Image (cartoon, rainbow, N blue to C red; front, side):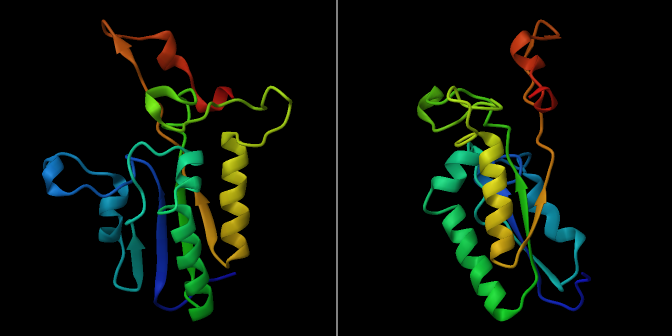
Length: 166
């Protein structure tokens, strides 16, 4: 299916790598979603008002000011006939264990201890895809950045974890 015309919207869903930073954070802090609009003309509108630092695929989905708002925007755009892409990038914070730092993160387990995938990174990615499509949107998944831990010039065991290993 080809998308023609104007009024195309991109809704950004992600963590600190994607989010927009105010100048109070310093001139050198910027998520890639913050500059994405610069690569389009006025026919495309990038909405990066929902991404925020520290979000995992689970916490973003469950926060009332994140995924539910994306779904409201998708529904409104579907009614208005506005083609909408949902750019999704998580995993940077999903590798932390649940409850670490007081946040609701999850691990990169293929299955839970009971053998199901409910509540895993994969489960949430599937939810984003299914729910986006159900509301007329086009989901686009982006490869997450790897978290590197360097000690004395070398990547530590903790930093060797790779999303492709899961």
